[in-house]
Image (cartoon, rainbow, N blue to C red; front, side):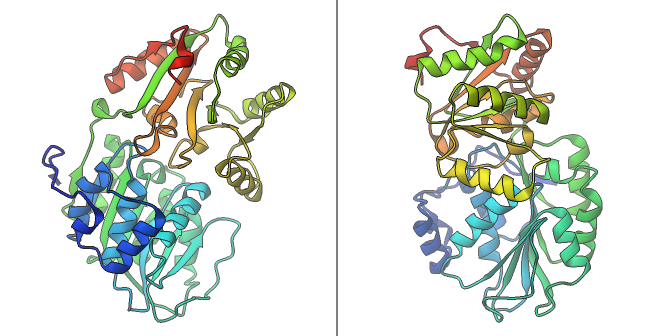
Length: 389
């Protein structure tokens, strides 16, 4: 596996510097993107050469745009076959990526099919003689491939993407991912694996699936979220965390906020308490009905919900640029998860703010473990913090 040097950044000052076809450029600018992000500048030149790539890039740096633009560039639009496949670990992420890539391809006349649980996949293509892209979760995509549901086009996979591969390679997903790989991926298929975090076990799986890949990695101690101010608050007891959040909201005006907890039950309990205190709030977790999750996420994206209570289900890839504050009501069990949580704010270089509530010795140990893992120092929130927000 060859490595890309993060410090040797090419001069790609605009999207036109990548020599994208006009229809892709039109889609980029219509979507509202003006300049490539740092991750796109670093990774796209290698992806556009059709190399297999293993990418570790922090949240909020344009990962979705990186693999979406690479895929759109490297397929053959005028050939009527299934040429692209993108796997994501959750329905929310799959839906978000589906919306982004189909918007970027607005002028390309391609077929995009969302393959997620609870949604029927039909063999009805808008453009039968044009390329088709599948986006979905491992289980549903595995079902689509196994049953050969889309019979009107042959499988001719040019680009295979796994986003958030450290989650997608969880043991529950491995059988479906292997099935998809065996049925759909050829020697000539370009493979793009991307995530914000990676461990040795996952890297070993990647090495078995990738061919002579270029590895573009930000090491754990280098992973930080620029533009996000991170603080902690010591509370006397774990039970005092709720009152601490009320005090914060009395002191400052917050746009939108995500509060992370470690259990579904706590989501339900806290939502009731916040509503009793007249907060516009809702919760979301993995045990909820798919339609309810979609409705709540839509309301949050559209600003109808100001505070979202959630478990780590929403810690990855949810791109709502109006989120100005992330609160860790519970500290994450895994230090690697911290970057996914706080990365929900400060998207694309915007100002972000994260507060960690420390209510017991275990919380404090988690905080210190996070500081060590990322080689960062998280300061205590100052009394005059209102001027920081």
